[in-house]
Amino acid sequence: MFHYHCLNPISQVGLDGFSSLYVQTDNINDADAILVRSAAMHDLELPENLEAVARAGAGVNNIPLQKYAEQGIVVFNTPGANANGVKEAVLAGLLLASRDIVGGINWVQSERQNDLIAKDAEKEKKRFAGNEIMGKRLGIIGLGAIGVLVANAAARLGMEVYGYDPYISVDAAWNLSRDIRHIKEVDEIYRECDYITIHVPLMDSTRKMINKDAIDKMKDGVVLLNYARDLLVDEEAVVDALRAGKVKRYVSDFPNPTTAGAKGCIVTPHIGASTAESEDNCAKMAVKELIDYLEHGNIHHSVNYPECDMGICSTVCRIAINHRNIKNMIGQFASVLGEADLNIANMANQSKGEYAYSLFDLDTMVTPQVIETLKKIDGVLKVRVLK
Ligand SMILES: NC(=O)C1=CN([C@@H]2O[C@H](COP(=O)(O)OP(=O)(O)OC[C@H]3O[C@@H](n4cnc5c(N)ncnc54)[C@H](O)[C@@H]3O)[C@@H](O)[C@H]2O)C=CC1
Ligand SMILES: O=C(O)CCC(=O)C(=O)O
Image (cartoon, rainbow, N blue to C red; front, side, top):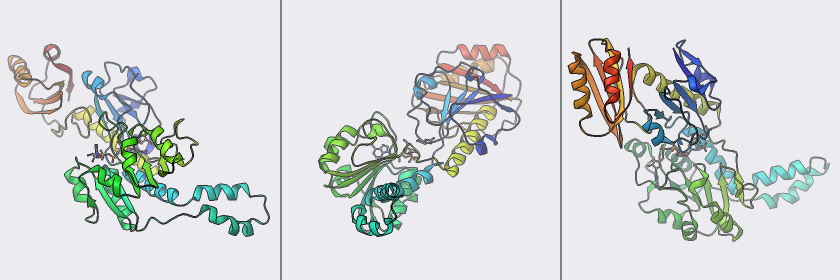
């Protein structure tokens, strides 16, 4: 029996993927696994028995990845599962920034008692006029799951699309329309584009990457869109640039005291991925990842441990070891198992940065003493026995 705890509401369609072997618990201390969306986990101490955290979404800046890796806790995310939801929100953002649709709706609302509203609308509508996006130049920073979808959709809407991503994956490159212009220096995006949208993860290297220096290089009247994370942008600098007329509109999905209500800011309450489809997709993928890890020890889409897949164990037992990526770990595991007269039928060892993961399928059941000996090896962070 496995227990899981949800730190945020998770789509029932996804949770239905758990078999009768799984029970939801309100007590985090009983949990083998946690499902989370945007809840902040940096100050959350996790119990020793916890095996995994699955982020039903893309961004993992709310999770202390290294701290959990040190505890042998594997953190997963769900790459691409909510990308279409965000793409559609970005398209809405492009249109909302181009025409004063929000102002127009608010005007109609404020005139709802006015019997002459139809006639007055014809006089007032020039205040809410704007421009079309067709033929305008859109710069996309970050061509991952979301950036690629935004690029292709904007190109189909007749925009001239510039894409910048020095670390683009082979898959993303294959999925990118040939109409997208490949930009090698981000300054070219700043210099040339009428609209700039950012789709990179929040990391130390990307924090405040859109700052005053970057804004100064942009075209006058540029529109900035941020459906990635507010901390990627120096928003004080953006608000100053809006006041000065340098930036025309700032569209953000992350409300905070700097941007909420500020002139020229169009801010939504982090709803980029809040569609039934995205929520279901993320939850389904997260649950699948947890099941494969808890039952079979396989790792797919982890952000702090390597990919590792040995399928379903067809021998008597499988040992899963989370450990540091240092020399002679496999040698030590093999000698402990050999000394205990255990034959290794199959094995896998993968590493990612400072951490590594090993699976051993054995022909005979391992004893608790052998597991204790493995746990005592310097650099071992967690050992599990799986059937
Ligand atoms: N508003 C919302 O509800 C949502 C927001 N997000 C945010 O969007 C971000 C991106 O999501 P995905 O596209 O799914 O992630 P992804 O991991 O598929 O793509 C990120 C891309 O950014 C690129 N990148 C990294 N550093 C870069 C840099 N310095 N310059 C240019 N490119 C760089 C990477 O190479 C990668 O291709 C997430 O990390 C998350 O913060 C994601 C989903 C929903
Ligand atoms: O769960 C959510 O709605 C947040 C989505 C998000 O920001 C992400 O996937 O990075």
